[in-house]
Amino acid sequence: MLYRSLAGERVSQLGFGAMRLPMAGDSVDVAETIRILRHAMDHGVNYLDTAWVYHDEKSEGIVGQAMKDGYRDRTLVATKSPVWLMDKPADFDRYLDMQLERLGTDHLDFYLLHALNASSWEKCKRLDAQGFLERAKGSGKIRHAGFSFHDDLPAFKKIVDEGVWEFCQIQYNYLDRVFQAGEEGLHYAKDHGLDVIVMEGLRGGSLARGVPPSVQALWDGAAVRRTPADWALRWIWNHPEVSVVLSGMGAMEQVVENLRTASDAAAGSLSEAELALIDAAEAAYRGETRIDCTACRYCMPCPSGVDIPRNFAQYNSYYMFMQDPLVKIDYRWIPEEERASACTECGTCEELCPQQLPIKEHLKAVTAAFAGV
Image (cartoon, rainbow, N blue to C red; front, side, top):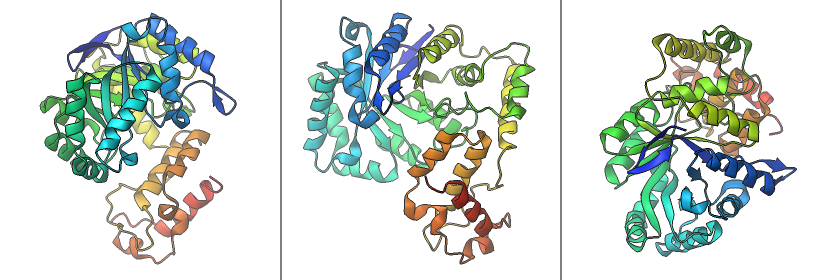
């Protein structure tokens, strides 16, 4: 295992994300989860990441069980404040105390305001979330404070500029170089003194499964044979600005593979030829898309409330990843009133689209593809 620095702590560059734990039917397989978590810790992983909401609010308690029998003393544990549940300043303290109890610990090594965006950041400022974090640090309940993020780059820069942070957590992978905070956000954070944790390095596992033939042919032709997950994780670890890459490992074989990759994937270790190969894989993935939307957002706001670029992005991802059922399920994250099915075919979007896309027909295709989700 290779280690890097996060807020002054020596952390494994591979972090265990407890959002996609092993399942037995509709429930988490607790025994198997503890087994693979402890295997990861026994082989060098010392950063565990969970949150209040994961696995129907059961993830924290299960992680707490895995940290018993001496494992807590050698582990850095992180969880997140569910800011959407806060109505008054005292709620932050109340939820933190419940999280400490769930995790069976008297302190958290890393604590994040969860999934900040422009709106929730304004709420956090109104409720003095920063004051809460400073008090919690002063009392010893948390050691390091940061935030995780899901919004656009301007919102990210605003949160970095207005808050007092030690680290942040962003989505980043070789397909999402300009998505949300993206590569510019990665450098912006580091330039402002924040260490960076990366989530969704495998895009929820999509970069490791359902690989289209056009991409697999590139991996098969490489001078060094690696799995798709290996290539994706190495690309992120090649960035010295990254402290930890989280992986939601739901099976022992995933843990073993990721441990192997993390043992030698040092910053700057990929050759120019290997980086060019990954760029070619990105282009091949893009070639699998069905709608040539550039997300310029000239079509927005839609009079009917449809988030047109988001619907098109989800549709493209569905076909980019070989109609992966899990990508299809992700369509549920789009609020019903913003889905393609809300289109009234007024045609305003097509008048504004600089690409002259047949948006109405594309929205019908999106509706058909995700019917029943």
